[in-house]
Image (cartoon, rainbow, N blue to C red; front, side, top):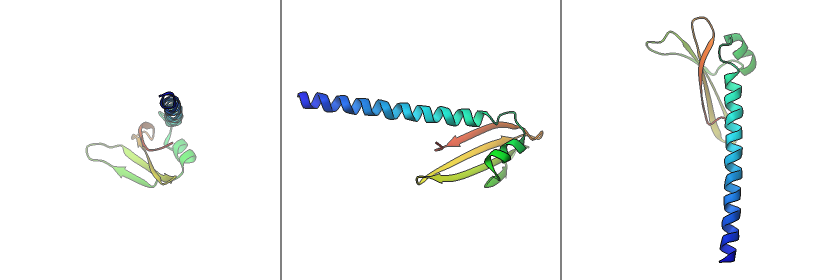
Length: 97
């Protein structure tokens, strides 16, 4: 029983550590992406480079710059919304760390 308690304790501690790291990484990503909001499209392309794809969606005059890459076999996708004034007005991020 004592071994079980010790093993359980170490599993719980390691899970908490992983959770903390994930939260820290997510916060860094959010801070990085927020730095582009209300900034000119030129600032975005200087920092991020040329987008992999630019989309125009129905009923929306804004452009969507899509950046894709792979890190450790995980596909990361960031999408930035650019309005008619060439300002970044939104973003989304999937699997980016």
